[in-house]
Each structure stands twice: as C-alpha cells, then as structure tokens.
Image (cartoon, rainbow, N blue to C red; front, side, top):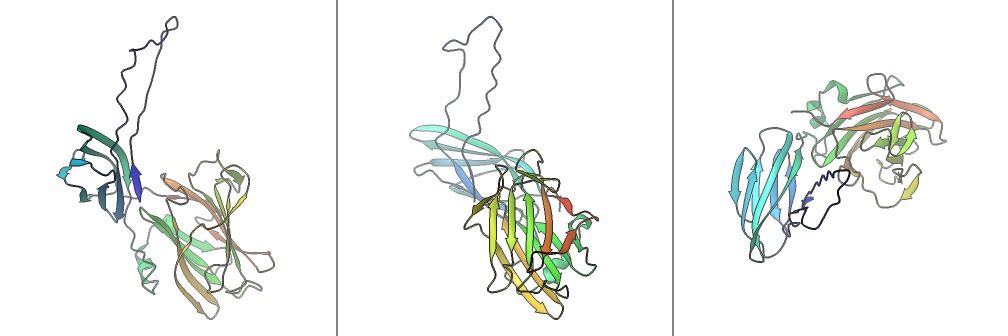
Amino acid sequence: MKKIFALICIAVMAALSSCVRKGDLDLEPVPDIAFEYTCEGLTLTFNSVIPNTTDIKWEVVGLTQATGDTFTYAFPEPGTYWIKMTGNYNGSEQTVAGKILVAKPSPVRLDDDSFDDWDAVTYPDFQLVGDDGISYGKFDYNADYIFFFVAMNTTIPGCTAEGAIMNIRMDSDDLTGTGMSTKGLGCDWYLEGSFWWPDGWANWYDCASGDTEYVEGMPIETGTYRDEGDMVYFEFALSRKKYGINGSSVGIFFKFYTEDWEDAIYMTCGDKTTYHFALDKSE
C-alpha cells in the first residue's frame, strides 16, 4: 500500500551580496491531509487516511474528477500520472498531490496451482536461459511484485531439488554507484537459499550500505512447485515495496550452486549473466 503526503521542492537563489530576510520566502504550509492507494492491474483505489477530513475531491489531472472518501479509477495505460486530493480539515480546505507510477498488469498468479499463466509472458528481454543448456526461466512484474518462474535441471551432481542453492544479487534502483559493487551491479539485496521446496530456507542480506548485513523476515511469496523427473519447476515473487524496486528498471545476477557451494547453473538473459529488466513496459 502506497501513501502520499506532501512533496515540497524549494529552490532558493540569492544574490551574492544579499541575505534572506524574514518575509522573503512565502512558503505554503505542509498539508495535514493524506491519501493511500492500492493497485489491481491498471485499476487503482485511493483512500483518504486522515480522520475527520471532509468534502473530499479527487482529480487525475487531465483525465477525470470524483468525490468521496474512496475513489477507484481504471487508468487507460501504464505511465506516470499526477493525482490531487482536496479536503476540508479543521475548518480549512487543503490539497495534497503527487505523481504515481501506474505499472502494467501481469498475467502471473501464484495461487492457481499452474504455470500456464506464464505462457502470456512473451517479452524477449524477460526470458532466462541456463548456461547448462537445459534450465530456463522467465521474469515479469506489476505494480506490487516482480515475478520469477524457474525450470531447474537436477541432473547436475549436487544440484538436486533439496540441495541446490539459489543466489540472486539484486540492484533495486539499478544504480551502480549505490550498494555493494558486484558483477557489474550496485547490489542492494543478496539472496541465497533453497526456499522452493517444503523444508527449504533462505537468507537475505541488505547490501545498500556497501557491506552485507544479514536481515531476518524479508518476504518471498511462493507459488506453484513441481518436482518432475530431471527438472524442478517453481515460481516466486518479491514485493517491490519491501525491496525498494520503484524505478524504471532492476538489475539482476542469478545463479545456482550445488549443495557443496560449487558453481552449477548461471541464468543468463541475452547471453549475459548480469542483466537489467525494464519496468516501463506499456502493456
């Protein structure tokens, strides 16, 4: 759930020989009112969150207006939109506004006991290929999650369903100048584990400071899992909010170790082991 309070940008230019005096800056007070919103594909629902706010009006600038404590709107396409809420609080009319990113919807569901929904993920740059020549996978996203589907080859010694160890290094803001420098990424999060099977495990490390700091309780949303002969299939999702994935792309390095921490499979995209998934698709 996203929350918008007030975004205030102040630019001050002073002459070389002058000082700012009382009264030179006429700043608007920070609004007391606020709203939050939830996403369901391209449909967003906005809610006022400060009690005793009345006479509420909404505006998606250039598109539509509405009234009421709650406002639901189906946006015409993914993109960045300017949202305004006006309300009466403590006897005065106030306005809060902000830009929001409306992401594309995803066909992926984690609760359908199926991988068929992944057939609709056809972007060429969202396809993963294992360097073992057998493993493969896909990536997708919506406003709330990034999704992964993985088909893992278990014929490699030590790379069994229970023994293989997955390693993901994720550059949440896709900026090489922030986080831990590794594999051409400014890694913000480092994951290792084998969480896809019922007794699995996962360790997360926060690397935003440039060091690896163990963090407990970071979520992984798991979906369908199947162990079929020489292959294991599974899907999972990571919360964009929890991991700070709010830009126009995310950087990923993705590999598997054997249970003895020997290199097993590198998941590549466009023949590269480090890649950048665009989060600005238009459909």
